[in-house]
Image (cartoon, rainbow, N blue to C red):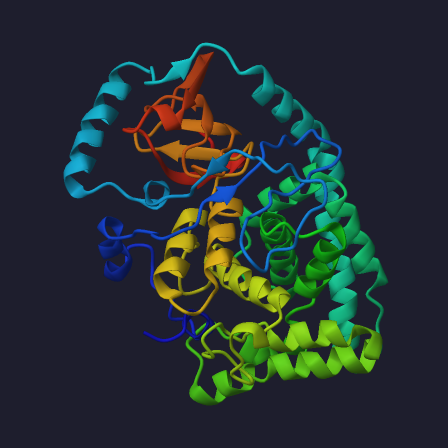
Length: 420
């Protein structure tokens, strides 16, 4: 099987119902993952301290408690039910349709969850505009690079720092990034989304603030070299020819030259990261075939979220993948391509459903995510909004999916698509 990033760029990523993806439903297992140390965090905190992972090569965090509760991300969190189990779930769905009640429900909204939601809703509008500011900044940078004019990244650094210093902002931006409806590929939107995802991965790796700022700005402009590729190749809806793909593979080197010429030696590290974002752990990448420690860790983070972003958004030849489906594709195709610690960070930071997102259960009922758990990213706490017939519930019902093994999330949806 070819490299995943190659397959994506050539327009060959399988549909959701592709047999190769379906066959993996009973096979996917993520084994031999080291235990992760995590801290319980809330979105309403003024400062957010990332969890520290005990593995060589992770940035250390001063003042971190020596004893933390250990959790492990296991296979059960990405496992789809077998055909026989699906029949059982079908019966559960039928019962739910007869009576709009849910196993494991609690009668009232947990105080902590309610507090999180109120705080999120209060700040949602204030920080979602940052996305548009990122777009304007990146548009200016790409326009300048395309015409060989020098540019500054000061505004971008300021925006990245603002997001990092406001924990609720990154969550708001993450929801906007993962659930956007745009269909046509836009390099600016792609760059913003990759930056948002990269920052979340960096948090999972225990990066300090300065490291997160560096990672964020590098992710934001990682594809700057694409401005030197003809628009007809970049925006082509069909499969790329060998010649077109060979041209696409030159964009990391173009990016290196653009950054160095415009920003100078002070930002040589940034030029290096941009030039390495397509390199892969086992030497399968381009343009230099670097491997292992030869690749800057920022470039590795950007590389994995670059693939994740491409999968989690629609393209002309396919529909988008849900977050956990995108993760499955990466895990199944990433042997010796991405480091295991990045796979673990991807699972804990990006594969869960964001707070306030709308989800559909296998019972056809619809709810909104109230609480998430990094140790079990596919089994959040759900406030049920509609029963299996699409009827809006009049009483508040909250279901803890961790306590209801026969219920699971099958899809997510936009607020405007909720039943009328």
